[in-house]
Figure 1 (cartoon, rainbow, N blue to C red):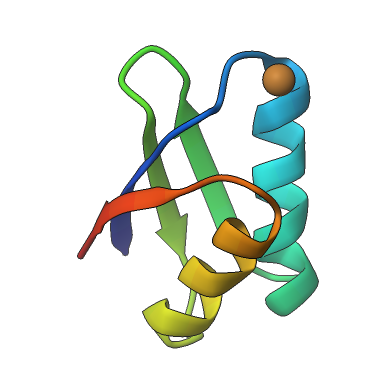
Figure 2: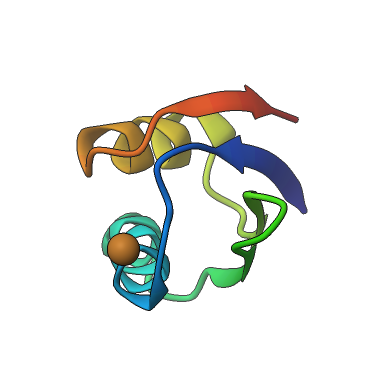
Length: 66
Ligand SMILES: [Cu+2]
């Protein structure tokens, strides 16, 4: 389980875009996003760096990831 902080998410569309970006890399990934705290939890076997760059490429800066 990865825990990321993702900026620029402001609505349901953003949640969908981030989820889609992650699932384009790993279709089986489970993505849980809390808009208020900008927290993104990802359950995936894909290396964190790949998931993180997919989110950044979609236009959402990642400020922390673990
Ligand atoms: Cu939005």
